Image 1 (cartoon, rainbow, N blue to C red):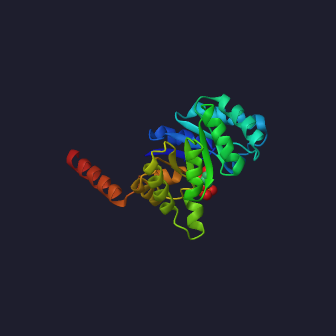
Image 2 (cartoon, rainbow, N blue to C red):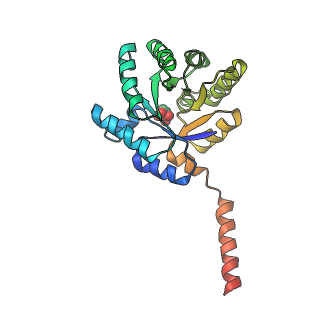
Image 3 (tube, helix red, strand yellow):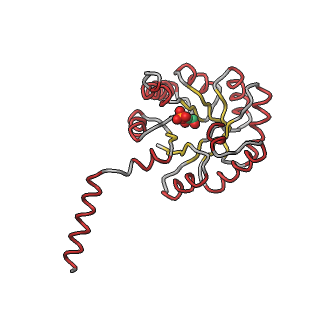
Length: 218
Ligand code: G3P
């Protein structure tokens, strides 16, 4: 399973990259706004910087909601760097844009997916990645992981190549459950990735090993 970091914060991306387990980056307009990136030229610059400090695919989201706008913006984003993946919302014109980009060989990530039907449409339109938002489903008492399981099964039934990218991942258990049900990718905040490191028995065990070593050499 690939690990993407879901942020536009350059120092968090660099920290995740330095761990050696990072496979890519996803962003969205809210995450860009959080970093204070506002006008369109700073947005493009920021995507370039993200590509420079990370190795894998970088999802860059369009703001337009009409087909022509999405095409114009998406082509500009894709031209920035070969690892840019154009992020397109799951709306009617978005499906048309996914098809357009897939025919042009431009890779896409279909975002704001909350149902298996939407995921099926994204795959049929040739999306490279589909992003079901599991945390936001959990927030409304709907099982986000169940949706990942369904999509993985449906794509497997028909051999769709679209990769299931679990998004809106909030904590380490989400990551583990995504791995159990066969998600291709999880995108998560840095603290969810680093939380996987933690176990009190590791800390206690290390303390004892070091204490025993110190006793033996004193
Ligand atoms: O990138 C989209 C998604 O990961 C957002 O997560 O926590 O705002 O629901 P969240």
